[in-house]
Image (cartoon, rainbow, N blue to C red; front, side):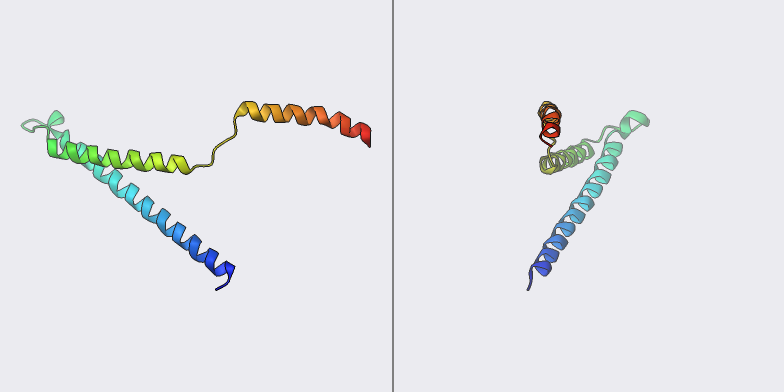
Length: 103
């Protein structure tokens, strides 16, 4: 098996994992929203009480979503500090006249 085939399998694996994570996110979001609606139904309808089981389901769904969002945030590329970029830009501007004089 050559490098392209190995890279292709790795890409398919990553895409498959991302697809599963997206599916998990959508399912847990739907369950959380539905559970919140069912749990708080007693606030909006007469003769209905607050359902603690559905609120527990909602809190579990939110914990899963927060954990997933925290993990995804850790894998995002980080931006360089704005001050570091300004320092680099100033250094480049200061070097430009020197390079022009050398020519």
